[in-house]
Length: 418
Ligand code: AMP
Ligand code: GLY
Image (cartoon, rainbow, N blue to C red; front, side):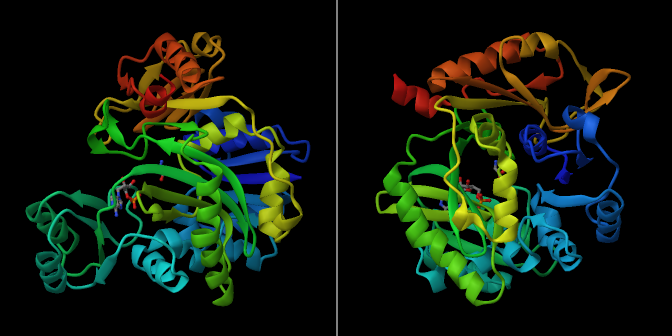
């Protein structure tokens, strides 16, 4: 079948690589894609639903895979399904699990799912009054999609006040004030088809820009899979107490969730608690999942889209650990230079590492950096240290003076392995 994949990040290069390996895939189109998917790229704007529909009918596309959250929240999956096109990813109503923090909190209440205590406000004075009562530390979350920038973990009242002023700067806003959870973070992925949830790998991300988890928050500077803290007990508690009740509630409301549910957990002394849901694969978490997935991904994407996940066996994973290091343009997540050239990628891949592209394009056979997060250099090994060694050997072979990366991806697991 012909498959259309939407998105342009490292996540999409990794998905494209996995989909291309499938015996079910004839032609793969990626829109708009990046330098890593150049052979498959088509110019198509996911915000133009009509254009996506007509592309699908002209090119006999039988499966559309939506990578990022924005088109999901925007209802692209609804439009495609209305036209009878098989689509991987949730409809807009269910994508509110990522689109609105207040929505997710209300679902957790109804599901009695473990999460941080909270209060939601759409008025600055009421939020400030609550803050004065609740005190710090406290977590301030702007409602709505914020590309990882909507959350302030405030250690004191003044920074919480500043975050609130910011959210309500132009008069109105929506905010969730949350208790601070303490513990280790881990992400679990579940493929869902409206009623069934199938575990689909674990990972740990590194959100801060600098070594030692310092500096500003980013979309993610590196990840590895599996996460050893995601024990069988954590998987089953998460499925039973959080994920299945969520699916049941959304199905009962007539807005079933299908696609991949990214469950961000804090492992607290009291058991796993939900920090956030995302309604798509993580980036860069997807890169390490795809590096380890041995099963053909396409039957899983189809089963999620068609409601037949219950008939699928658990996927097969490599026993190896995969670890990815994000190379970003110097200055990211702030402002950075574009149109710089990256060299020696072939030498880097000779180490055995895989390089998933993110913010790149190919111009006259040269690889040009055009984004903040630019490359995801992915190593494998029988331990996190081994995978890390392969990834950094490849990083060191790359010539890109305008780029930087963290040098400590995997530090938690490496400390545990030591
Ligand atoms: P989110 O955008 O919801 O993923 O939040 C971004 C980051 O903020 C998370 O990855 C956590 O590190 C942190 N965070 C969010 N909510 C809480 C919480 N209730 N307690 C502690 N940290 C949190
Ligand atoms: N790496 C975090 C995310 O994809 O949301």
